[in-house]
Length: 435
Length: 200
Image (cartoon, rainbow over all chains, first blue to last red; front, top):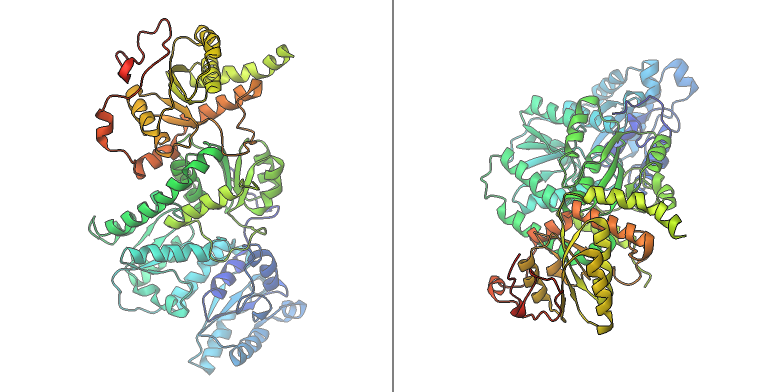
């Protein structure tokens, strides 16, 4: 196991501010107000949103995001007045249901009392839905930022509500960082609804989804580590139990395991999910049956490598190995997971139908390139940073992880029953034609 | 040149033999007659026992070559027949090979739960580095292909478990509607007329 050093060449994630900003900006009618240095916000647009399969500005991203644009003056004299000014201007002209001040490195270093500014604003106008997230970039990466945002929402905005039977919170899928996040949450939601449950995936339903976090019967974390802290908070504040499914389920087998975990955790009878599972598996395996010939022709148990964050690396590696019969030789985990969660990740890659791959925790792009150069593989699923290396090594290449500058991703997804089929299509298409 | 080529590939062949050693793999091949001649040789080099090979067509001029194969590779059965998909399925159930190599346009028949199926070739141009079967590099490439699929038959297991076969169970209770026209001189274990396996 490699211990990650502090400085990185072309890291595979953004800073904590980036994670918090993307989380809030992607909750419909939630308005981020960046309290950060000039350029922090736009750097996230170029380096984080566009890098995530060209996620555009949308409604409130990019230049539309209110920002205090802190510079030398505020560093010397403090940024509280500037923040107050920006909050008032934002409330004046931007239409939203929830306003969220996200503080970056500068206010944390110069000691701005953001809470005092928030309190003062609320004293002047009690009805203002305004909260704050302290997310200095140095406090962690974008996965941490996602958790900081959720923690702030749960602490400052979510109130106790009546429990809705069958409602399940889904946490752990981080906007932008998981490049297929929109399609992933849509597929997870579809599957749970097919099984007669309801999913609160946080995104796509406005701030009502945030309010509903306290109505759930269960929280499911789809990651070995990201989202566990907010899940604990939901348990502490509202008594909602949580379970961890330590990966994005890719393909029928893992998706059925995911549904069984949800069913068991909700105390459902063994047969409650049977019809949905049978129908979905039948459809997915029917597609695999059709794809079987071309997989046998073009992908006859080929060695493959994966470069991705832990939840996607686990999901994709397990599917390609256990269901599609490919041979994993190397998995590079890029999200720098905390030490205490690394055994879970290693465990998820150790009981496969083939020999276990070499697993390396590494977020430094220079090191990743060198590690890859030492291995033999015919397929590489990674970030677009590896694209040309893979082509040089005569390997088939597909972007499945951040950054992905080489594909537009709208509702594509490799999650769930349909996601496995989509992954087969995308891999096979790389070697198809022209005649 | 031959020396040079052998120097380059022999260590790799040895490594493949080591990795396949002890597996006691019995192979059945179904394909064209060039495969009937070529595959037993590759298998013998890798230490895989060829139980039988089915040839879709047969030229009597090849008889001498086949005799040579016996000398090189040991005894194995040859069935010459324009064998149908259902007959292949029946044959495989009877022979119970560990490895089945074929043209893989046969869908169901290649999805065995009990055996590993390896495709002879791909569809249309097959220029991937792992595809050659000819000459020195081809031996290595095909040896690696066999090894990979023997050690990782995940795709076939998945489809065998989760997709349906078109044949009724009763098919496998019927005698094989096949005749064995060419039996090796020392054969005492192969197929006989009416396709019954008389001795394992």
